[in-house]
Image (tube, rainbow, N blue to C red):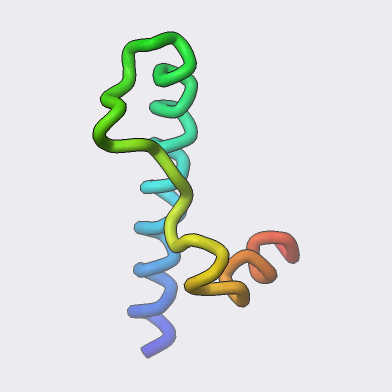
Length: 56
């Protein structure tokens, strides 16, 4: 199960890196306003995820 959780974390990390890059495009007015870019999972859904990011 640890492998699966590691893979899931890798997917989230990749998703968040792409969204951070796309968020910069939004500030230039080239983003899609219907699909705002945000980090996943939101802090309110997984507080422990953010704690583990701070430990890295």
